[in-house]
Image 1 (cartoon, rainbow, N blue to C red):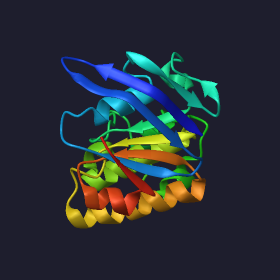
Image 2: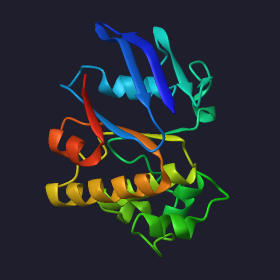
Image 3: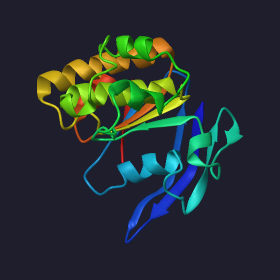
Image 4: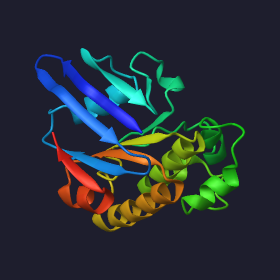
Length: 195
């Protein structure tokens, strides 16, 4: 279980204050809100990329507030897939877990047999699938998704929303999705929070 207690962060302005959240195992929530309200900063704070001004984060009752990002057991998928063009699909996946089953991971995201493909030849949807496969290979206890469907057309976005939700539910992996799109939020998540 992920628990956020009284999280607070300001830059030029206060983004969020006294933010509290309890995310049960396998639960998926979406956070919506206008641009600049702190949604992405909140995700980045939870995974340790941004230092909080105040508050504590617990994962399975262990405080992780000051633990380095790579030791938290939390995955993050960005709006645009962060893939390394000099590496093949398999090479990018090995960054998530060099001992993981690449073939099985690609099959899980609907890209079976494409491990030798250049990432530069991938469509936007394929790139997001590779980013998802890489994140899941690291076996996170919680997956954070920062607008990963926003740059895709409506049809592909709807398809990926359903597929990713199904994968997360099968794995019993908790997740937090940040999105502007309230339709995506309600289709993807068990509950929606407005920030």
